[in-house]
Length: 369
Image 1 (cartoon, rainbow, N blue to C red):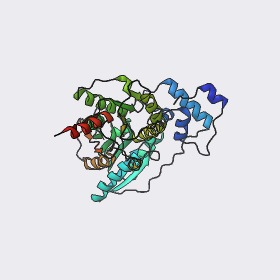
Image 2: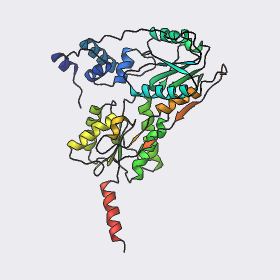
Image 3: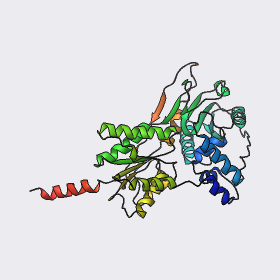
Image 4: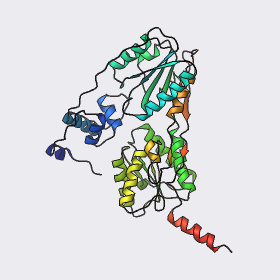
């Protein structure tokens, strides 16, 4: 799917929706919602090209985007056994809700209450939100980011006199307990599942490669190939942006190869949706003509036809883990290892042996005396 040039966008002004969201900007700019969030919030430590940044700001101005209005209130005061949960993005991501639910379950089991605030990583409002939580009497803090990455925690977090755990992020100094998904192992497991079904020409459609999740899942893919002595072919790796549209375009590109793949590892379920549509338009059946694996186990994955084999992002378990590792006796200066939780594979009906292998197996079975 070719992205429109700036000249064409100016020739056909963008229709402004009633309430502009980051998703609207992402669609207009031709990038992911994650990239839009990082650009508009000027998130430190992200390596996004200046060209992408310019497109995001151009789309935001054209659509008339207005940043969110922040309010911070503390409904609790002087309450013991209250745990604060600060997350940079809440409304745009199901992962945050799942992690919060995991933390809530573990909190209530111990008789604790959970207070949640969305910060958007804003350098002005985030400290006010954290302060509102601490003034409300929290006895511990969970600090979460939606996109897995190394972060630079602001100094006021280090000054808090309460146990703190990092969820889906970590710091270079390992000053706090931290938990993230085991993405490399997840990518390796997904690819190995296809290899075990007889596939040797396996493609992958990544997310935006500057993101750690995309890098790690690609590393896992390459490790699985290497372990099986399957040569790595860069033509079988296509960068996407986590969207269905990118999945469609990438799949069409893969089908146009002189030697197309027999299986495609889509690095998230939305990419897999686009992949399904492209294969359908090409007259190919899943899994008879092409096996497909996704990642994330979003609700829609089980309702696709056929239901999608995919990997679970362990945000529920990560939320529970965070509660369990709020150590009131944390030692200043101690270095904590990063805990990595398994992204378990959910096997459904989108994977089968490649047609050539299936035919050989069938013929061999009938040739037996």
